[in-house]
Length: 202
Image 1 (cartoon, rainbow, N blue to C red):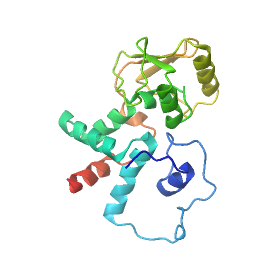
Image 2: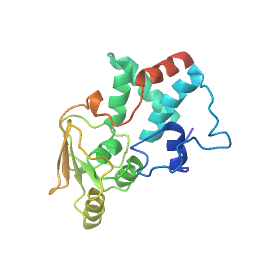
Image 3: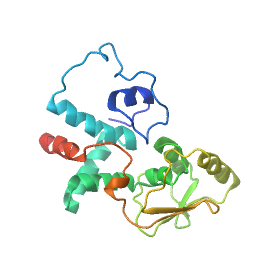
Image 4: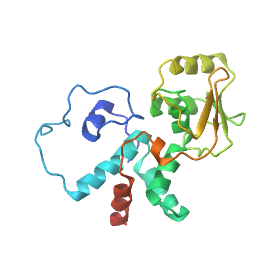
């Protein structure tokens, strides 16, 4: 299944707040569709599926990409759920978003894809690039790139830069100092249910 490009508020009405997907707030509090207001008891499968979908839509990854992250997290050892979140959070598009250079992850991905962002002085246009401690993420030294990011910084998507990152607004330069801690993940998700969803499918 390819990346979702449809109405974003429709997704947030169904899954709840997804800070990486959109800053807009839905006027209607119930899920979309003809039976959105009908209260229906969710099955265990439906609950796990929803948690998985939160990751997919918030971080803008395809089902195939998410399966790859799950497999990689299992091989890494430790808490699989936390490693999945760390892998997703350390993607370049998400890191650009968390630094405030893009108002949403899709907007940050566009900055990366269009060659506005450099990592350690080199242009990287791959949104799924895994940032590592020590990486320096900057805006390309072109007027168009700098204007675009400066405009985005006026209205950042999230209020605070997480503790594993630092950002110099005057230089438009960020640095990755470590791997993100679970408490700094902005998305309200139960990663254990995501792991259970994939373990039952395997």
